[in-house]
Image 1 (cartoon, rainbow, N blue to C red):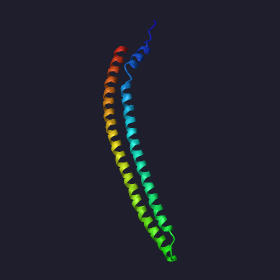
Image 2 (image 1 turned 90 degrees about the vertical axis):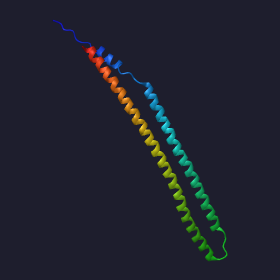
Image 3 (image 1 turned 135 degrees about the vertical axis):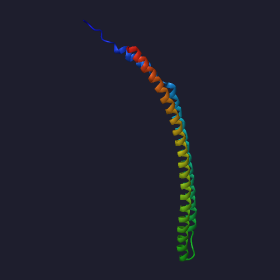
Length: 150
């Protein structure tokens, strides 16, 4: 009495064929990721440019103050006054420039959060749609596979 062994290869092949790969969704996700990366790069490069401008301005201000301080004086006490004026002006300038850097950083933070939140919303919507589609396809594939097994 020989019993016939069921061929599971055909069942697994049918099941695998029932799970199509959606390359369109992968392409769309790639496009979304590259668009987000482009926007983030734009924010970073804009901030880098503004930071470079601010650094250059700070340097020019400092050089101008150094030029004033380095001029020859007629009285020895004038050198002390020039040093004191330079130190005071430098401290004031540092506060102004650091405030400008803080504004640049604040803008970058705000823009980054806006991009991340927008991307998160888009990803959430995409994931929900993909999960619904996958659930439908898996249910259909499971029904087909169980029908083939009978």
